[in-house]
Image: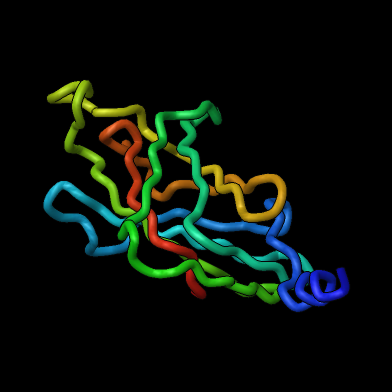
Length: 155
């Protein structure tokens, strides 16, 4: 039991949604071939360190906060290992999301918006709760909300 206690102290605590603020915005120059990349960035706004690890757990939301189709998956399946990203107060972590804003998937309408426009992104960190960040600019995410996500890294 004592080794587990020491491990918990050494690792710190997972980030709680209430301890974070962030953004989800387009990476300039990333649009092409029917895809675009947005950068998710979370900052620790608490007074204590916390950590994030793995692939972000996300959910797309419309302008009123209703859930939209969201289908996150690894950007590079089977490649890489999740790192423990420790965030001191004021420090940030980021991940990228590649998706199609305008190429419809199977069963989506052709010639008009493939999915409703997403205005916010709910992020569930490794700890409790969630943080909702603005999507800049708001966008449709085709293929039923398919997002290819990278692992968390230091920003």
